[in-house]
Length: 246
Image (cartoon, rainbow, N blue to C red; front, side, top):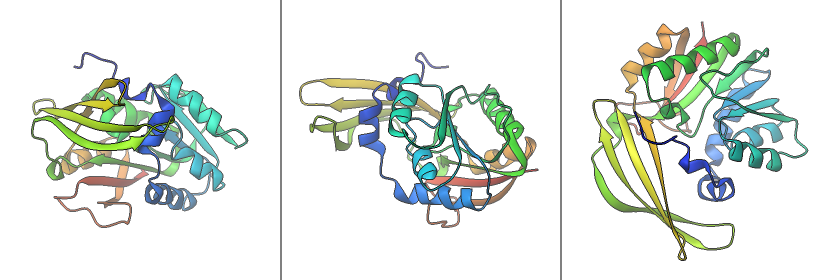
């Protein structure tokens, strides 16, 4: 389906954090949700622990699972002294004897599961590892609220890297409508070098998502447009889903 591992964006964890950290409203959203269902919480595709660690610091017993060894190594370094467990694993095949009160994915990680079978395997993992009536939460970009047109290189923003350099970020996008997959290529201009990484993300519309969750043992309790819990509408850019294991 793709000609790369889909992990190129995750090879430089220190600068990844500098580019993507700081979503305090998101961290608070998941913290409040975890507190509403006391018990141990599992984050799948946790990366460097951008959300796992704030929840752990707030007193939630956390486990984080990710497929990238580089991201996990940095997560463990940042979490030194905290009671949080980080484990290598693929969310489609992860196995644990533990059963969690809540499982979540964030950072639009749900979109990294590119095929029907990938999505089914993910949901099977989640359902198996949730306690009875446990919470499953995640967000995904809404195709109806996203510009899916093909685009040549455009400026996306910038960030300050670990050495104090201003890194300019730009990219291209190409959408495969037959597979519902967006192919993004990100270029970062460091002044002294230019790097390129590729990532593919699947877009699932609300109706398909609702049907998928229902068929695999979940009841959708809420869907929001943003972290302030604005109700989802067809033009929302995100679908934030709060589900309950049936």
